[in-house]
Length: 395
Image (cartoon, rainbow, N blue to C red; front, side):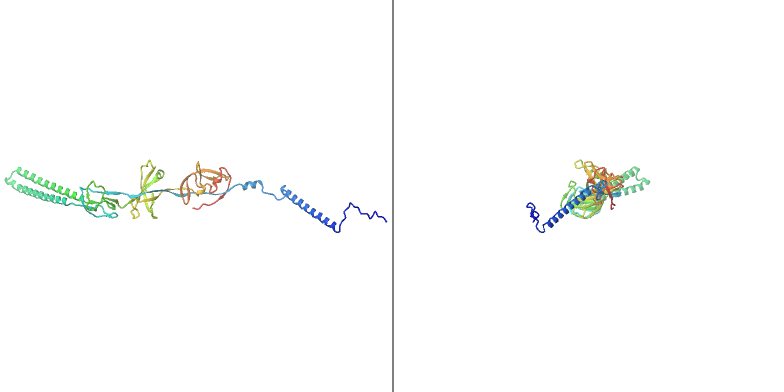
């Protein structure tokens, strides 16, 4: 029997039942994982080398960096120039009324503030008891002078009848003629004195110089008045009012007589139509302002001395109108961006006109047919290329 063939090598491990199959499965798993890693790596390097799907080109990337902006052709619109100001309401023609005659004690005051009066209407009466007696005395003197004149005329007529008979000389006729003429002159003197007294008495009454509205009354019955008493009544001629609007020097330069205006008193929502009837020829050197006088028709709400605001339409012009977002400004002034033929932004200096709810009118700098950047102008720089999105502006 050969024992060598049945010897077991002590250095070689013994294999247990089923252990060989498990080892083979482990090696298959490791191999599969390694293969997956290699495939993923190959896919990554393939896509990075350009052999996979192509990414955006350089031109497309540059095009994506060009900003898109909204632009419009503003055209031109009829823009009214509106000037605003404030001031006090006053009577357009205020007439101070005082004592025209010698004065005296006031017996009656016939009007109150707010009353309408006619021309030459009596506002107040002054006592004339003494002056009335003077008038009666002068009236008597007139009658006496008239009687003397009638007697002188009768004597002259009789003398003329006797001259042909030789009973009276021509010299006597001349004397009687002179007597008659002197008597007639005396009548005229007496009549003139009477008329003067009547005129003086009429001046004792305080009368309205013209038709209008009584604004103030500064006299009471029993008061002693004279030519030095000052103003007793103030009357607005025709009831016409005006607003003394204070405006800056630049605003006044564009106004004209006849420009329409709307006046709104403080505390009132109602506006009153008027027009500029006078523009101040001088400027206050301290405030650099002048006065535009706006004529107004009478209304109860227009009280002299009250405060009011005014909107004056100082002409109109055809100008482009832009939204406020389109107009920019810096230390060089106001400007907008317009696009040239290559869609590049070009800075354009402009002069702003009226600013309203409709937008900003451009007084100069634009014709209206340019493509103007409406928004995002603050983020642009001159010469920068943009993608224009043309929009239509609403009128």
